[in-house]
Amino acid sequence: MDFNELLKPECILLDLKKGSKKEIIRRLVSALPLEGGNGGRDEILDAVLEREEVMSTGIGRGVAIPHAKTACVDGVMISVGIARKPIPFDSIDHQPCRIFILVVSDPGATSPHVLVLSHISSILNDPVLKEALETADTGEEVIEALTAG
Image (cartoon, rainbow, N blue to C red):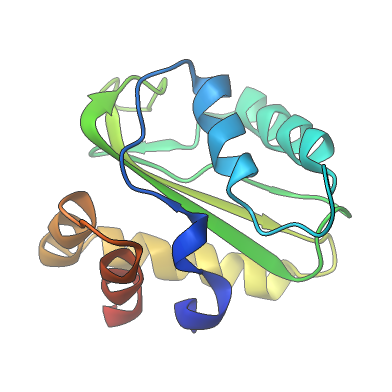
């Protein structure tokens, strides 16, 4: 999975501040590189929040991977938020999160969507790469950590 193509530094929020789960997701959606003004952001936000109602994407160990499929995007899009101080996210382990990776894809991109989620999970299971994400000072450092896995 080539995160150099999927993720650009401008899609990375390096000092994500506290807020509700919906506010965090809204900030991640706002960082997506969509065409034109709104570009379907409201629909994407609704799709991600609807997915959150099924089960929290706060997967534990300080990580949340909110995701959804929507016709508002072509292929797969990713944005990343890193919080210096942990933020509550209704995670399955009841712990706050510092790493937030939003993945949205069109409904026809099932295989790429699953591959991206799988790649992200494997990176976050590596303590060195996870720490590199948590301590990244630039968008390039985030991309480097995500492409190292």
